Image (cartoon, rainbow, N blue to C red; front, side, top):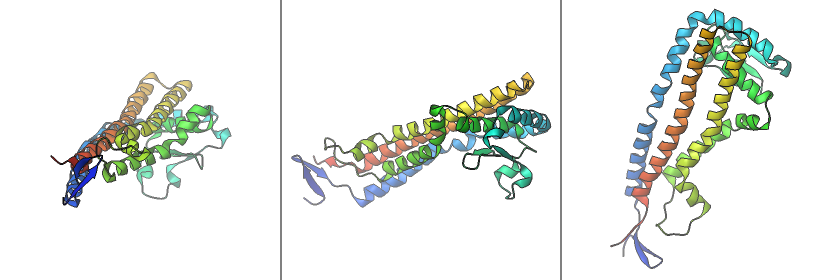
Length: 255
């Protein structure tokens, strides 16, 4: 019969280009819908970061003390402040900060968001002054993002076999791509949490006022929510994409 093939004595309807296309369009739409809250999850963090600028001169003083006390300077870590950030990007605008392991630089606009600097010092401590476990988490950041992205490929472009067909390693990955995408992001989430805890402890170690420490905790909790949200929603998006493609493309027995 046209468009039919036999597997283990059962006739299956071959999937068509149309069914693949329909599945791809719907899977992409579903994935986009699931990920759409990410645009809002980060807003509480961004809003508080902006509000804290009025107290930046206070945070900056404590940040300098924390950096001196951390021992990171002896490890070759430097602060790359705003006046040396030549591009008009998020770092210069004071909407983002980061620690760059390769150059051992904390990239931050200390004229605006010193409150975020303690967290970045925590990242530096994770990378340079930690035991193997935490250092491993820090090194898993890029691979984690890469694996999560690859799982989306498996979800959308997989070649679905009939139910009951022999399973290869590729099939197992396809069946569990949502879980793998979520798990791949867990080291990132864990390392972010540890960086925040260490940053808060550094702030306490230089006797930062309790009210300001509480502000740090609130800000870092909101930042953590963005990473946790990306992990959860990313895993759900991959899982849902896979289910949609499975529905449209898995060969069905001919009745």
